[in-house]
Image (tube, rainbow, N blue to C red):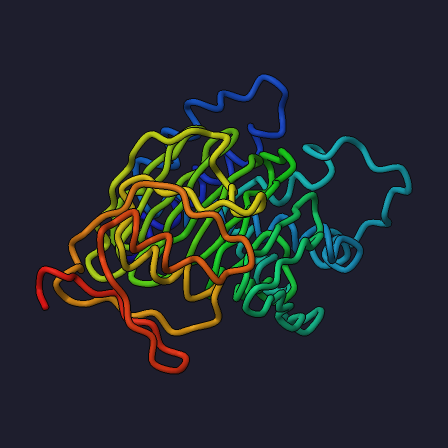
Amino acid sequence: MSARSEIDERLLDEAIAWHQSLEHEDADWDAYLAWLEADAGHREAYDEIALLDRAVDDHAPELKRFVDPQPMIASAPERTKRRPWLYGSVAAALAVAVSIPMLRPAAPDIVYSTGAGQTRRVAIGDGISAELAPSTRLVAMTGDPRTLELASGEAYFDVAHDPSRALSIKAGDFKVTDIGTQFGMTMGGESVRVAVAEGNVSVGAADGAPTRVAAGEQLIALNIDHSATKRTISSKDVGSWRRGRLVYNEAPLSAVAADLSRYSGKTVTVDPALRDRQFSGVIVVGDGSKLFDTLSGLMAISYETHGGVVRLLDPAAR
C-alpha cells in the first residue's frame, strides 16, 4: 500500500468516526468543524462517507443480502446501530461502495432554472429548499438533493439540520459544505459569493483549506486565483433580492455587473479602467428599467447601451 493510500484510508476512518458520532445528541460540533476545516481532504472524505451512507439507505435490502446472508429483521433498531458493518472499517465501506453501482444505474441530473427577470422557489427534497433569482441554473447531481451545483446565478438556501448528511454545493472552483442553515450563494462574473443568515457553512477550493463563514458574514472568492475575502454584513441583508433590493458591501464591480445582467436580460461589460472598483450600496430592482441609472448615480460612472449590450464606463478615462 502506498503512502497516499494510507493517508486516504486514515482520512476515511476519521470521516466514518465523525459521521457516526454526529448522530448522537451530545456531538461535539466545534471539534467536528475544526476537523473539517483543517484539511481539504477531510471534507472530501466526509462527503464520500455521507454519500455512501445515503446510498446504503437507498439500497438497504440489497446491501443487507450482500454483506450479511442472514434474514432481515423486520423491526429496525436505531439508526446508529442498524448497519454496524458500514462503520467497522474502511474495507467494509469500500466493499459496499463497489457493490452499489451494480445494483441500480445512476439517476439523471435534475435541473432547476429561471429566465431573465424570473424567480422561483423549489423544494429540492431531503429537507432542502431554495429560492432562485433571475437567470439561475441549479443542478442536483444524479438526482441527489445533497449534491448540488450552482452553475450560474444566485440562490437562497434553507437547509434542515441533519449532521449525518452534509449538503455539498459546487460553484465554479469552490464548494460549500453545510449541515443545516440558511444562506445565499451567487455564481457570476469572476467570483463566487456566499453570505450566511443563520448558522455557518464551510467554503473552499480543492487546492486549499476551507474557510468557515458564520451568520452575518460574507465570503467573496475569485475563481481566477482562488483568493477569498471575508467581511461582516447584516444577516437581514442576506437574500435581500427576494424583497426587491440588491445590497452590496465592497463588492467587485464585475460581480455587480453580473447581477444586473441577470435582472435586465442584457449583457453587461465593465470598462477595464473600472475593473478594480468596488461598490457598496443598495439598488432597488423595480421593473429593471432604472438599474443602470441607479448604479451610475451611486458610483459616479456612466454607461452606454448598444442593442442588448450595456457597457459600464469611467467618465474620467474618456
